[in-house]
Image (cartoon, rainbow, N blue to C red; front, side, top):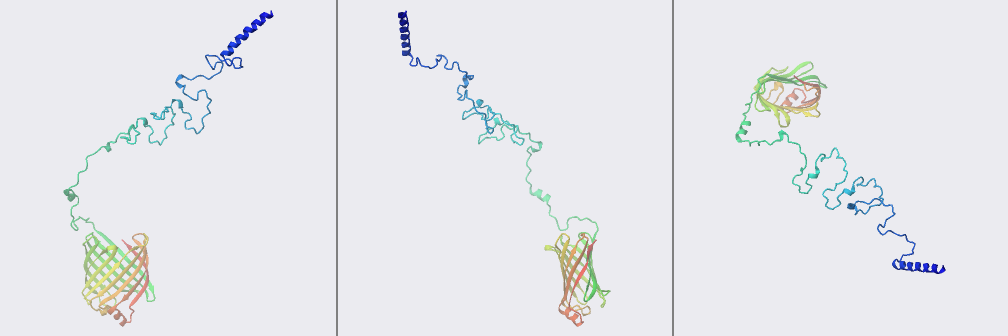
Amino acid sequence: MKTISHTLLFIALAASGTAFAQDPHAGHGAPVKPAVDPHAGHVMPKTKPAAQTHDAHAGHALPAPAKDDPHAGHDMKAMDHSPHGANPHVGHVMPAPAKDDPHAGHDMSTMDHSAHGTDPHAGHVMPAKAASETPREPIPTPTAEDFAAAFPVLKPHAMEHAPSFNSLVVFDHLEAWDNDHGSGQAWGIDAWFGNDIDRLWVRSEGSRSDSKLGDWSVDALYGRSITPWWDVVGGVRHDNSRQTPDLTRAAIGFQGMSPYKFEVSAMAYLGGTRKAELAFEVEYDVLLTNRLILQPVVEASISADDDPRRGVGSGLGHVETGLRLRYEITRRFAPYVGFLYERKFGRTADLHRDAGEGVSDSRWVAGLRFWF
């Protein structure tokens, strides 16, 4: 029996020696691997289709995308990662266009995005043109005959005027004063009746002092408009005084508005003892506000000869200046306050000195200006 046992042990050792000769790991504690599948016995994830065997992340457990990942929610596998992909947004879930997006509703894929696109509106659904935008025939160039017909040469006063009768009465000043020389009142009135070309002018001015009527005058003149701003007037003037006989003379002159809106009146009175007398008056309205108006005024007279009975000498007779500040409650009615200064010159001043009278006078006044 021992002989048989030794024989079997020898055969086993011989067989194991052959196995060690073929496999250097024979007899080691390494597990035996199947020859066909190296992963046999492993629990492996499902293999991907052959078309995606290039994915380096197959079988890896990837972390969840960050909240600020611009590709979160995108199907990255379906994207064309080539550098010249036709559409970089393939596979992206794009948000809905904003309400103020100028391209909302446009088919952007058909647009020419090249720097030199021939039509910037390619692919846009453009609204149809309105009928009013359709091209029209150009307006012909006006000829000399067209200009002559449109702008005929007009002669002065060739325009027809309304035949209606108009009138205006202005109490330029109606005022009173009280000073060391006594109290008094004065007035100045301008009125006209007629149309834009032909008018009858009536003027009157005078004063009252110590409850007695002083010197006063009235002019009745026919006026003819020669320009839009100037009238020529002619007629008669009547002067009345308490101490001397009345004086009636011919009157001629012009009146109107000079540049810068100075109202000017220049009159010549012919006849009587003085033979000729020139009277000038200039006034101007300074608008401090729309209703508060300052009116400076200057009056002067020059006589050709002496008139001792009326206290008027030859040369420059007197100059009167004044300032009146009025407030127009309405355009037709305005109270005012003012200051007046009068000075006599030359022979006129000598005649007043000889009569024991002063040659200058100043006074504060208050009054009304109104028209209708």
